[in-house]
Image (cartoon, rainbow, N blue to C red):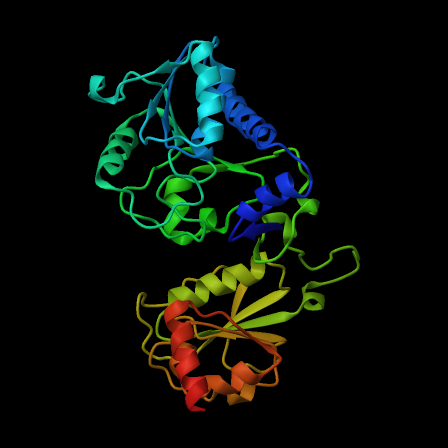
Length: 358
């Protein structure tokens, strides 16, 4: 399990103001992570272009080019004026060791480059990209070059709001703490593979306010199989209600098997099943005519217009999903400590209205 943060600027401030780090030290560590990724993905001697804004995101990009210069042919374009102090320091050093500052007007496209580094906005971005920079990002996105975003692709805010024309990365090197916005649904096709860079400060030193969690595959704990003298009945019998749309029930039943349920049964509630003329079940899944004998029940997925008295299931552990959130009786399951409710946003909105009325 990893922590995701909605605001990480305070970590940088704490590192500098409380722990005594230099901003340039943090930037060196950030740049090194970018440079290491480039070395891993690209052959020596290839051409790299950094698109730079005016802030610390640009500083990281420029410092990364300085580290790569000599091994690669490195150039940068300044897309904004009035660089901040850190970016100006990094730019002066980079120029001294031969990093080329290119004129945007001299480039019709970026096809000659093998890698494009996005150092334009960073995690502090909000609002709109702007016509000029959006046009440049569009050209970059259309290239076949490896695209690397620093911290977060330009055009994506820390909370995951994506502006029109955002940078589309193959890799995002996230600096220090992971940003919640990188894992937002709207951002998933833009961030590429996420690489977390260590800036020289252990995450345990961070403040954990305003954080969320990313659950990883190895966080799942399946039922124990340490005892060998067992049978399938020792691991519970899960029942899945099948409404008008049978596919959803079959997916839920297969999931229950994979998660470790000893037995899984489907109970058909509708004589008018849409999507298939008959249930095409895995041989391990059984059919049942009632919920008698169930250790747990899942219902709502694919329910459709089927009417059924689900109140009999209130005493059993239940997973409630989908169409169930549009029924008035859902309020009873919302109050139950034995029910797990899994609505998506539209279903959750319906649930709130019903509970408020109730």
